Length: 112
Image (cartoon, rainbow, N blue to C red; front, side, top):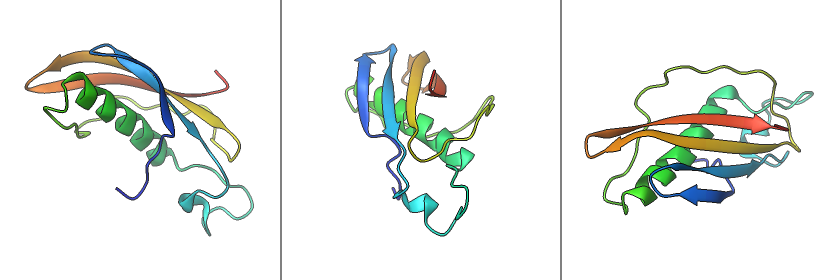
């Protein structure tokens, strides 16, 4: 994996969900020579951050019996850009969880 898009898990409840945190800094690889005057975190990387935290929560919930991959994005809306200095809270709720697949709801929040 090229980018690890979360810094830590701050809460976790097995089979239910959890919250991860990403502190966005100007030193991130995706800012280098990409947005010189107005650095913004690319929106697909926000989706990937949600997927990474959700994947970890699924993997830990099943005792690492399965690994998770993102297969479908049902709905994505972006309300404000993420800039260096922002802290992203990645809220994950497990909607369904079984041996055949899992579904999560994920929300990335900056300043609530």
